[in-house]
Length: 86
Image 1 (cartoon, rainbow, N blue to C red):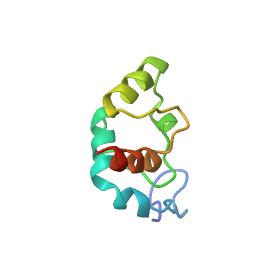
Image 2: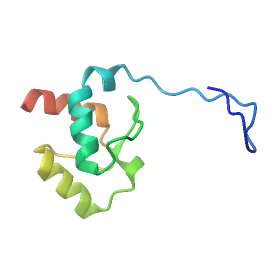
Image 3: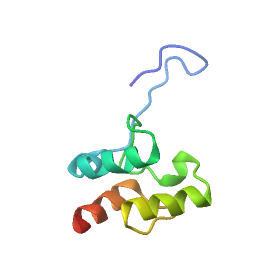
């Protein structure tokens, strides 16, 4: 994607792959809903820290989803774990 405005105009941005996010789309949607960001763009490299969660929010998310999570947890990994739990 090429940036058309601002100080980076003319530069190209390349998104990380989304193959795992797409494979576990239903589970990713569940995670994003629980985070309160249902329309967020996530890639295979997105982690929970990208959402700037406080420790109590991480604990609540883990309890809501029924899986252990940390700030460094990759969303695609959480989604895969949810697929195994569901």
